[in-house]
Length: 393
Image (cartoon, rainbow, N blue to C red; front, side):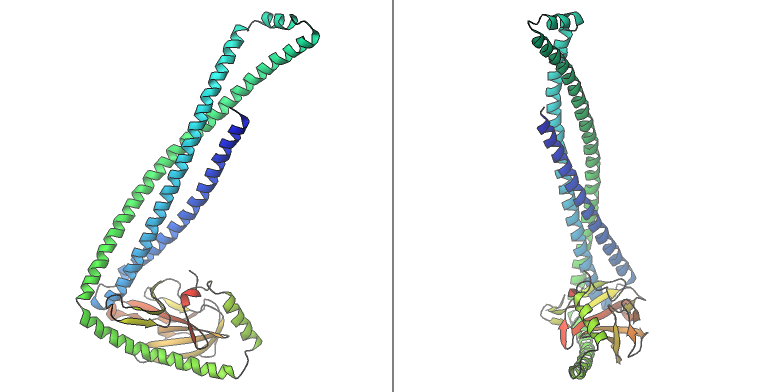
């Protein structure tokens, strides 16, 4: 076997190990993160009573659970495919090296047989001294030495290749065990996904039977929400008019600039939670003919959770709406963040707050199975922005 071929096989080996190792680490990290999120959602579902008022919120939570489970299944599929590719690469290396090993053994056997025939030192001496010239005798001596060195190199190559083959076979056995375990985990994840899909269908059917009740609930919630939104918009426009006539202080300008630079990296306004309603207009999850408008996002979290500021700023307003609980507006230069549906407020108007500083306790609706939702918005003066573009993914 040539040196170039050995180097080529080693190169293939190293590339396969590097590529598969890198991918496995990324996939394992993704799977751990997704599994943690699924476990948190399961905890949310366990803390929420299965009553009619909580059902819409539970449906949104289940939808998130199913989406995450699908991501987990996709990660399993990718990891299994990558592992199979790595196994195929290892098999190729083993087969190629085994073929070369057999060639080396065959070549070495011929040399051994030849050496056996000429094993007598007397014969070797005759071979050297029968030379016609001194130069020819010297060349024959070198030839015998090269033959001996070549045999030694072949033995070293045979042992080295055998060692690699043995290691790759052990690795293949480990990979096969790993693949079997992954397939079992994938099967279990698929079973849970099927159960969750069934639960989702049951919830949809149950809620569809309560269409009139849902419409009545929705109208009541929308009336309260409109009052909250109008008050927030009024306060923000009022502030925008005041700020239009004066420049930002250097400190507030710096905060504003830093706010914009950190787009997509802000901490969540809750320590834990999942997004159960998104920014903008979208169809109601059950009443498809009805459009829902949200000036921000809804973050469903656990009972007792607190709202926290996403960035340094100043508390601009603290207010309450009958039936809509309390809200806080924090100004960050040209930008504003709004935290509503609070049961308690820990800060006062005019107070300076820091990133992740706790602002208040989120309201938990006991009549709706302890449903705990923070309504969160981001504005640039009087322009509504999608909060999901600003907080960390």
